[in-house]
Length: 344
Ligand code: F6P
Image (cartoon, rainbow, N blue to C red; front, top):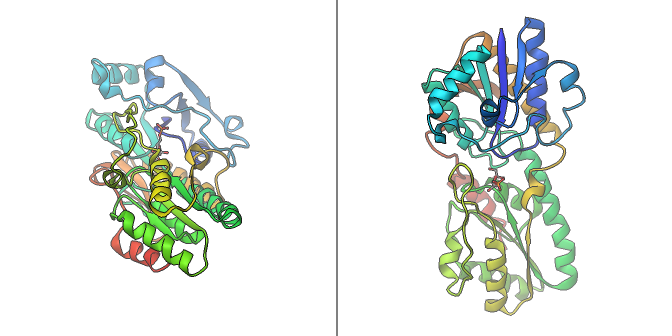
């Protein structure tokens, strides 16, 4: 049996743990595993690598992906579907395990509909894939963002400043909310629930009146509604990524400036950026990635194609990729209300 593996979309900590788990659980069943280099683009470029035990030795703790990744979509290419099927028929793969986020799962579904045997494994620091409680990468990103909040606290307190921390997450506020709660932020602004600037400055002022001369504000990069309220906001050009989605980032600078203007308190912005995605995965992400990898091979042996590994109530299961891409998993009201109790 011939199994191929690719990683697609933005990288995240834990990808190598999945690749390692796939290889190690496939080999005893005499399954040959081939890595496709650079996501779906590897099929266009004809770039493959044999994945054997030595190839995956010592990688469980490594960030990034040994296979490389891209946001290349075969279905955006001229005659993409035809070329994809032709190239794959030469390779004789029995199935492809596509490890990717929400954008990559859309491609996986198209490939499945085109007749390719696809198994999905969900990854993203954003934790926004429907049907799975967690994606690996999220736990590491939350830890990094929490540490950043801890560090900002001490410098904010020393200088009596308002510190705005912008974190990733696209249109889901999970990283902002979880790190905000864990780090004891004073306000957390997420895309799902609009917060007015008056409320934010109100919290800062109230803290000041109580003798707290600093505040920590965490904002998710996708909380674009803030822009509407900032009348003289600098226009920043929003580029698109290779999946055609708007590239986010930078709202934290606007917010810090606006807070300073409105309150007169010295404010600074920190954009955490790619630090959240790079480096060693946490133990949780290594374990989740490993569990997903082992399950993906079981799905292959059971010929459960067009499905994605998932975790629900700590049990590894699988759902149709169609269900996974049917909507984004965003922050629910109940979770948000818990965080709000601690604001200010
Ligand atoms: O989806 C993961 C993510 O890190 C988002 O949080 C962020 O908006 C985006 O990817 C950045 O992607 P890129 O690598 O294209 O800049």
